[in-house]
Length: 78
Image (cartoon, rainbow, N blue to C red; front, side):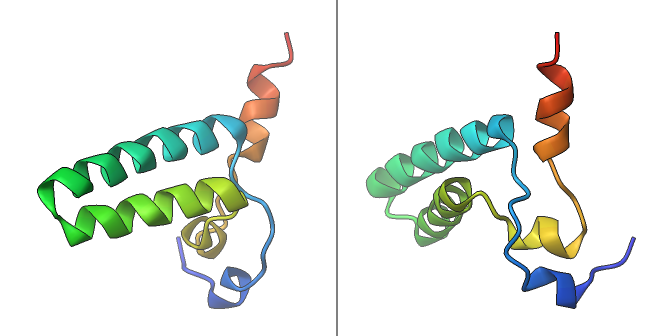
């Protein structure tokens, strides 16, 4: 598996609905905990998770050519 930098700058949606929900909830939890513990690292990770959830695009997924959009469509087709 190789990391493609050219694909990294293409802003194509690559986060599915289930992944968005998990990222949003975990990001909000990390943001809340960082307020009480004054942890800058948790604050930054929480902000990144919320931002990628909101935008629907993850630069790491783009670089690794991963896409979770198709995974959601296959599981709801009952």
